[in-house]
Length: 340
Image (tube, rainbow, N blue to C red; front, side, top):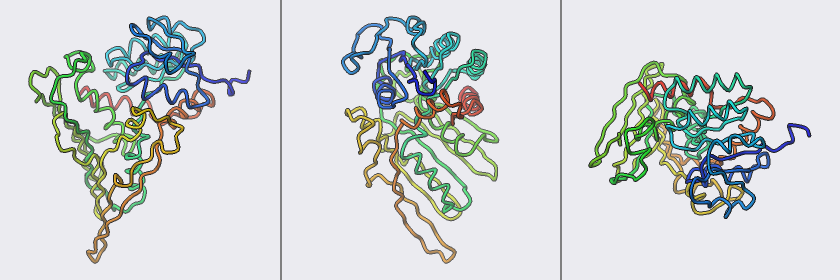
């Protein structure tokens, strides 16, 4: 069979929230993939949604399956390196949840292993394909802000309690809010602006009895004195705009919508015509000023978004050798900032 026509037989290493919401629906929807197997250590639930799926009791068993071509590593952060390396050494392509590993040294070893075994490793940076982030790109490309001066990006949540998830709430490698949300914000900044000249980082612990950081702030300096501020917090009752861009000719404010995750959690499938469509009340606002001092307020419609585009990039890289948009350089720099 022509290799370019074959579906990519794929296995998931977990069928928790990320497997159910962020991976399985798109692997099912995209005609270039075939969701073949999953690892379920205790309860076997995947077959209720995917009757033909094969359920393994252990990661090693799935990786050893000769029919699997792509392995999705969506397990706790500290296990990413071990499982991804095993899959690469078995000759599998690998798609890895963020952060791809907990250290830059581990990531370099994975990329080296992928090259050595003639396979690909893909960081799963799905937030590049969110409608709110796409609107940021649209505004920057329009030039209406003038020369960029200041950028704020935030992830706000209110979770005063300590989660029972030990891999997030106990001081193990890859735990804490910075490692949970920092990869999203840093990937956004690195994809838009490239590598910073310098950065500083602040962590905080504010919830009662927390063992890990539940607040993080990163200040990055870019050429032409562009200032970029990234903030993550578990204790924001009144959610702030997720994106604020200030330039010499205007400002853009946009709240985070997370529309795809909401729709998927409610059972909507990626093929639904309404999938990835923001409510117009959530659109961002661009305010510009001309040389006479006249202000113009403009609503920026958000484009339809879908994580199917990420899986299309994975497919095109594996089958047709096209470049994947999240580069090795960006991933290494992201981790260097996180671990600094």
